[in-house]
Structure formats: structure tokens, C-alpha cells
Length: 289
Image (cartoon, rainbow, N blue to C red; front, top):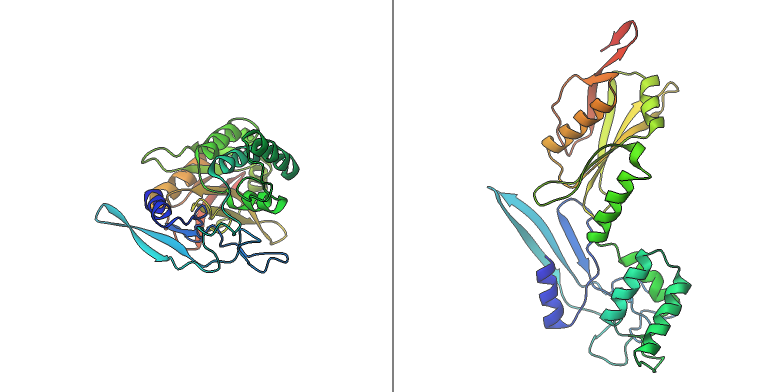
């Protein structure tokens, strides 16, 4: 997908934002100017980098008979801008764009990035302060904060660091993404573990969502129980890069190991549906089925 996008960039001189995944195995690359314009620019390309351009390229990943491929859909008719027009507010210079991305990942504020980018432009001999390729505005930086959400090596490093340090007590199981090995994360806080102990019930509800982490295309599962007041409360979460019976079953097994007071009555799991899972709850003096 990245190779195809890069070919389009080189051939047509148009740029695309990092992919958004509104559903699993679907990747949508919108035009770099696809964000809605704000303020008094009215979408004019000479005043803003965002003018609601509807051009896009999308990929629907499919697997059949052990062979993986992608269905490509595209609408490459760009509206309201022309990258070759020098009067337009042109794309940020690639070198500066890379630096701003690093600064934002380091947690720098908008004002800090603005000053640093100004110094960089001066040091590299760019004296025309009207040249939007080298001189950013606060709105440019705020937009970059929203659009720089693609998955990269820094994301993996951050996850590895978090699960082994400050979030260590909340992780039941962690399997990093590697080659054919899917990403799996089973999360349960000490409070949620206590909640499960205090509210034994034969029925547990489980459902998946993809809206919270659409930039990654991963499945986010929430497991809920009914507390003593009759309300549904979450007691664990799963995050999966590959949603299959095997991966969901593995999550449940790892969760079971961390909660010896209950065990699965059935290990059969069927992704893509709302779950109602039955557990046999081990309690003192009685057993609820």
C-alpha cells in the first residue's frame, strides 16, 4: 500500500495523509488537503493547507485460499488546489515536516515547535517569511498533531516501554507485533480484578469496537459484568491486530490465568458478533452455573 501511494505521489505530485481505518482490513488515504478548512480562508488553497478536497485512495485487504491481496478504490480528481501553483499554500518542506514530527513525538508544545521551525528556516537560508513551505503557522502545527497518527517504529517502542514500566501492573498478557505474529494486549487493572472477585456472575458480555483506534485498524474488545447494582461495568480489555478465533481464545486463556477464581465453561469464541460467554464461577461454598 505504501509503495502504491508513493508511486502516485511521484507521478502526480499529490500527497496523502496517514491512513484511517474505519473498519478492519480497510485503509483510507485521504488527500493531504482533505481536512475541513477553518477560519476565514473559505478553503482557498492560497490561504490554507486544508480545503476539503475529496480525493482519496483506499485499500480493502482480502485473503482467499491462503493468498492475500487488496481491492483498490480511488478518486484522484483533486478539487480546489494545484500543487504546482506557486501562489498556493504549498506542502511543508519534507525535511521540516520530518523534524516537526519528531518534535511533536517528543511532546513539544505548539509554540516550541513554531520557534524551532522558524530557527531552522533561518539557519538553512530561507529568508522569505511568506514561503509557507518553510514558515509554519500555529494552525499548521495543530493540524500536524491531528494527522501524524500513522503506525511507525516509535509506536512499537512506546508500547514496549509502557507495558514494561508504568502500566506493568495492568497487563495480563502482551505479545508484540512481529512478522506473522499478531499484536495482542490483555489489560486488567487491579481494581477490575477485585471487581470480578466481588461480583461473581454466570454471564459475561463481550463486544468489539474499531472506532477508538481506527488509525491502527485493530480490534478493541471490552468485557463487562453485571455489578451488584445491576449495571454493566468493564473488567478487562483486549486489543488485537488480527481478530480470529485463535487470538480471542488466547486472550481469554491468559485472562483466566490471571483470575484463578473462575474458569471458562467453553473455549469456543466467534469474532464479529456480540458475545455472551458463560463462566463457571468458583466461590466459597457454592458454584454458580
